[in-house]
Amino acid sequence: MSAFEGIPRPALLAAAVAVVLLSAMGLAASAGLILGNATTSVPRGFYLKSGQERATYVTFCLGARHRGPEWYPCICSPDDPDGVRILKRVRERRGDAVIVEGDGPRALDSRILGPVRLDEIRGWWRPLVLGRTPGR
Image (cartoon, rainbow, N blue to C red; front, side, top):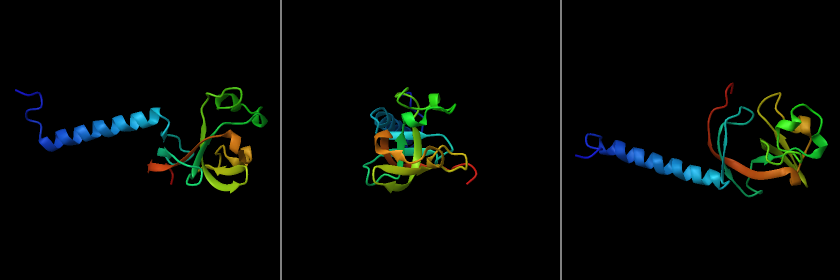
């Protein structure tokens, strides 16, 4: 008698496919190829590492020029290079910088930070699977 006896074959196949997909996504995430976002500042979902020319999103750290505000110590910066990186949509490219934007009026983006310099960018991304952003 099998442990799987009585379970329909399509259900077993679907479960096996789900395990393989989740394992592959976990491996890709641990290798830095996939990024998950659960915040509301940009669409929730998964983002795929991309070349600069195809990317529509970036992750970046704050620069030393941003020191001062109360939120500075909570985010990746020269003082905390392993801190949380910021994920934002690229609105415009300007030579050695990009203008980034979030989805909300209070988003921490180029309206507050100014242009993000290329040396502050830690990753270039494009959407893989996006969910719905609340309020949109």
